[in-house]
Amino acid sequence: MQLSIIIVNYNVKYFLEHCLLSVIKACKEIEAEIFVVDNNSTDGSEAYLTPKFPTVKFTWNNKNLGFGKASNSVLKDTTGDYVLFLNPDTIVPEDCFTKCISFFNAYANCGALGVRMIDGSGNFLKESKRCLPTPIAGLFKMIGITSALPNSSFFAKYYAGNLPEKENNKVEVLAGAFMMLSKKAIELTKGFDESFFMYGEDIDLSFSVTKAGLQNYYLGETTIIHFKGESTQKKDASYIKHFYGAMQLFIDKHYKTTALKYAAMSWAISAGKAIAKIKNLIPSKEVIKTSTSINALFIGEEEEYEKVKHLLKGSRYASPLLTLLKDNDQIRKLILQKNIDAIILAPGNIFSNVEIIKTVSHLPNACKFLFYESSADSIIGSHNKNERGEFISNF
Image 1 (cartoon, rainbow, N blue to C red):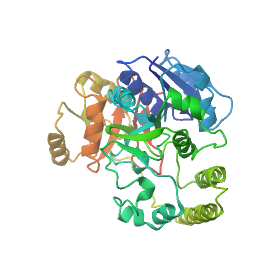
Image 2 (cartoon, one colour):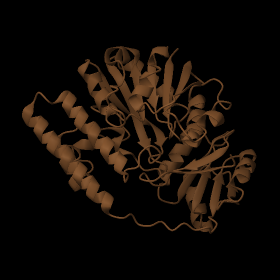
Image 3 (cartoon, helix red, strand yellow):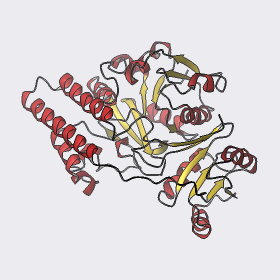
Image 4 (cartoon, rainbow, N blue to C red):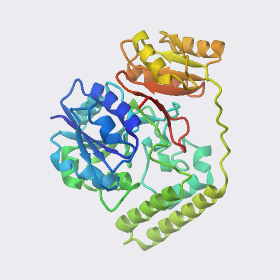
């Protein structure tokens, strides 16, 4: 077996549906096994997903174990030369896994590998590549200097800003949304530290990989979509508690013996938590929801178009315009000419997920994107990293 894929699900059944469909496509050229561990979802995930994916190995927990513990719970059952920890709110391109495995084969010291990630609006996710947290890097991020100087090796160290997003490079920290490890790295690290319930476990595992004498790499030549907001609500008090608690746990584990650095990092965490709480008190701009219909463009095959129209019946996207265009410049012109507000993308013979991800990257601010996968019973999208995504389904 070449690859074992582990996905932890919690109340995101429609996003997981699309994730699994894209993963299965990406596994066509390799031997792979897929594990889904559900952390006691209450959205009907089991009844919805089990009949759709007979080849997936599901585990249905009766309580929420947290991300790391749930992931580790099936590690003993994996037989792959590589193990991929993957978030359920992702879409992977067809050539993603083959490119990753080829990279491992080319770099014997590669213990863990991450990839370039964009959100559901096509924006690059800076957490795709990061450095280990330091007080000064955290301070620059908190006060906004990192955002003002995003390519600086000093002021944007938090996100390894000096490293080009589309180039392969050694990095210190990978994102848990997509983290592929070699069998050797799994044996040396034993997977995630289960002390971390949610957040921080990817930083800790990345650090453990390098402490074991291996290297973390960022693969900029392949891109996945990560729908931020499904598992992270940054305006939520629970997020603030768990995130900063995880950061404290990390420095307690790795820096307590160095008193000065530990004190500085503890201060930075406390300051970050206080600032986050203050920001949380500032009311968000109210989004006025309207029932007015939205002009939408469907890019895909006519057969899929009929299925999508059925799913959209009664929604604000009820009658999308059909096009078979593939050229992004032509699509952009059509958007402007027809006053298109949303694009519904469907992979098939016309469009692959590779091409769809490129399209989303090239048209990040033109309108919002929705995604439909052949045989899916839902349409999904996510347009704000701090809010829940959108889904449309007749189920």
